[in-house]
Image (tube, rainbow, N blue to C red; front, side, top):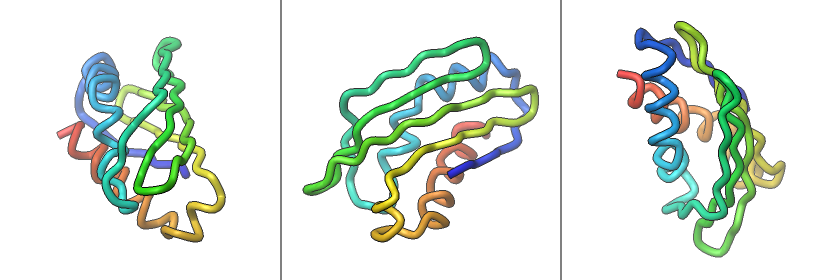
Length: 106
């Protein structure tokens, strides 16, 4: 799932916001209350690699991806397990994540 959002902040401000609030982006997804566990993230310049387990009800869903911060764009490329699309349409997940990212950047 790829999401690109424009912004008017400095890349440094955006990196700080994303780094501080990555958990918040994924905790309000349309699969119910989500607990983030086993989180790892590393920055290499303007690119963050991340992975974690999202626990919701009886499920543990591994999620990984990258965040690329450019001068006026932020791109999230998130790898979701295939079975998740059978439970929740990707467009619904994409819309929820995009809304959270936009909220961080305003």
